[in-house]
Image (tube, rainbow, N blue to C red; front, side, top):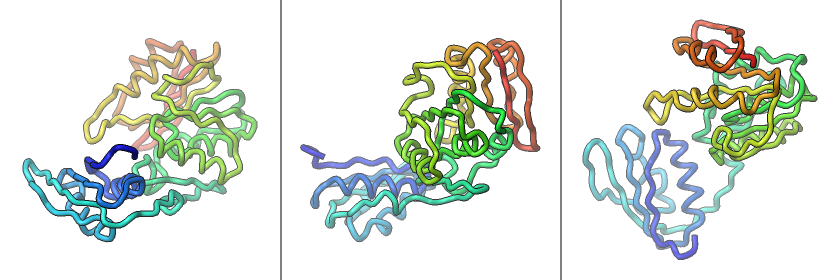
Length: 263
C-alpha cells in the first residue's frame, strides 16, 4: 500500500473473518507499519494479540462501552495464501468452496438446500443468482440443468472468489460479476434465484429483499420467474402481489419456504 504507514481495522463479529481479513491486509504492508484494532468485546477481539503474536506486537490502549482498542507495529512479514483459508463442503457430488465471512462458510445453509431441492432439469435459459455467496445455488442448478446459462452476482469480493472457485472445482461455467443487487446487471433473465439476507450485521433489515422483489420485473423476460427462499415467519405476499401476476409457496418446511413468482 503505497504512501500508507498506518492501518485502522474494525474487528467484525466473526473471529475467523477477522483473522482472514487481517492476514490479507498486513501481508501488503512493510515491517514497522503501525496498526490499530478496535472491536466489541463479544466479537472475540480480545484474542487479537494472541492470534497475531508472531507478526504484530499489540498492546491495549483503551476500553469503553464494551469495546477495546489495541495498537502496535508489524514486526514480521506475512505470506498470505488465499487457498489456505478455503473450507470445502460436499453436497451430492458437488464441491463447495467457502471463505471466512461468506454466508454458508461453516456449513451449507439449510434454506439454500431447500431452494436447491426445487431445481430440476426443466430449468433452461438464462439464470441470475443474486447474492451468490459460495456459489452453492448456481452449482446446484447446473447440477440438474447443465445447459442453463448462469450469471452470479454479489457485492462482496470474498463471495465472488468463492463462487468462481466453486464453479472451477466442479468444472462448471458461469459469469461471476461484482454487482450490488442489479447495479451491474444489463440484461433480462428467464429465472432469478436468491437466498437474500434479512440482516444488516446484527439488525433486521428487509431493504435488500424488498429491492430485489420490486426491481426484478426490469430484469425478467416476459414469462420470467423469481424464485427465492426465506424464513417461514417472513411474509412477502403483499409485495409479490403488487409486482407479479401470480405467486406460490413452492416448498415449505418448519423453518423455511420457497417463493415462486411469475410476471
